[in-house]
Amino acid sequence: MFVLIEQEHPALLKSYRDLVGSNVSYPTEGVRVPGKGKPEIVDDMLTTGVRFATGRGRGELVNTRSRAQAELVMKIAEAGGGGRNHFLPVGDGESAELSRKLDELTRTRSTKVRELIEARTSDAEIGRKAFDLVMARF
Image (cartoon, rainbow, N blue to C red; front, side, top):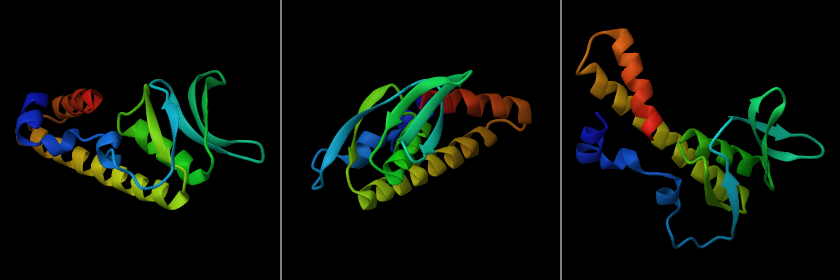
């Protein structure tokens, strides 16, 4: 299934780095997005960022300048960009715009993968497993 996506639907393989491009006109800063843990936004009096919870109160915290940046970090992790360093816009407007674009990409990706699987099997259990396997590759 993934080979079919690579050949016939390469736009689904885009990542955060593809959306940002190399010629940005706004200030950025680097951050490492962990590859493990469930991301959850932390926004209290002391900290703004994303905690990647791995169980029993443990997890890695990614500090951000604002809630908009934290939401972008969450979207990057959800889109499969964990375990890598990324450049985040410093400004809230640019962060919000990139979050919107990542939402659109992940929504389009999920919809198309479901369509491709449903065209090949009517068994709901096999379809769910296939969907999980394909989405894990992103």
